[in-house]
Image (cartoon, rainbow, N blue to C red; front, side, top):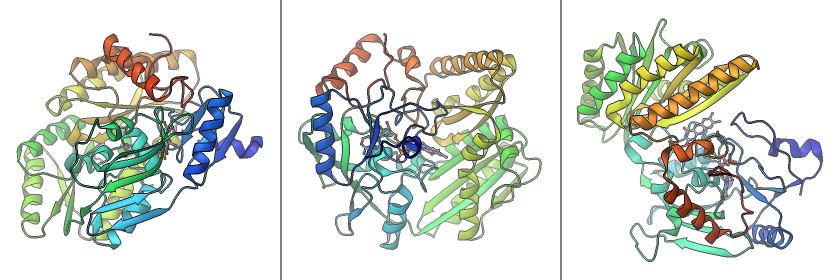
Length: 444
Ligand SMILES: Cc1cc2nc3c(=O)[nH]c(=O)nc-3n(C[C@H](O)[C@H](O)[C@H](O)COP(=O)(O)OP(=O)(O)OC[C@H]3O[C@@H](n4cnc5c(N)ncnc54)[C@H](O)[C@@H]3O)c2cc1C
């Protein structure tokens, strides 16, 4: 247990930019038994507990909003099993996502969910947030890979949910309910994950566009081809300006936007598919299409994409990260609306994201603390959320709701649905002690 102020500090912040939330202590659990003990004592003494993976969350999910104890699973970091025949991995929640991916790939297997934070985020955090990533376009998000969970409720009762088999419909889908519950239902202590055979070949291209709107139109063209890229990522001019000269891949000069398109599957036919995607980009108005020539170039390209968030963050005093999703047919319209909102409110936005899924990370970049700057940014955020909902989208694609977006939930969901979800929370945690203050606004 950590109580010392200096050592406690790193457990009181995350990547949301929401600042520091004080807590009494951090407990670094090493086993399920320790989690059970902490949650039993916490209920007895009515102490709030906030589960935490590695603190890369973007919406404040791991911040101890009501103080109490931070329960860190970072030491529960063992891969317990990788079973080639069953296509299953069993892991502790503190395993780093990229470490599992590397381990299964050594066995010729594949774990698709690939949040850009994969070198530092934990699988427990991925389960709690139902994390996505570029490859979600073809392979889906974390939920599709969680077969079963061992999870401890507030009070210390352990549930074994789900299964190890690829199919199974016994009872309600409690596993599915816990996935994406942002640490408010139970603490995951063991995760059983579905694996796939590793795709034999991968091919990647980068298309350069004069501006974001032409790139947005190219997304529709590629989608209409019938080809199924595993990733289709978009980066706008502002993001590219932050990356230029600071990443392993040398981005073309003067690019107004880029699309990264990646395909996988049998080697035979892959090149032809890539060519069709390249042609679609050119027809839409790409000025240059570059194909990664080897594995190193491919890795450099993805490392460059993954640097977008950290480099934007370190270059500005504040970064407000939005994570909206619009239906695929509305991507271009959304990009135009964001541009108009940014111009009207005089704020700088950097937009990148998983365009194939319509999931755009719109980052508002602030360089001072003046009340007018904050007011304009808040007005822009509200308009971006309104525009998203107007286009029949949703306000949170993969980063969760946490603290950052809870006030917007009633904009998207009607009171009966919010009430039902509050009742569900009470079933798991009647005293509201596990990660309290998250997802739903404190007043309706
Ligand atoms: C540079 C960068 C890039 C990112 N890219 C992506 C991306 O592409 N896709 C994406 O989806 N996200 C992305 N994220 C967001 C973040 O990495 C994910 O939300 C990730 O899943 C959080 O994992 P974590 O271990 O850091 O969790 P934390 O931040 O520690 O916690 C997140 C939530 O999970 C809960 N939690 C953690 N462990 C447990 C557990 N064992 N049981 C129950 N609840 C638990 C916490 O209470 C909290 O609500 C990115 C973040 C950064 C900083």
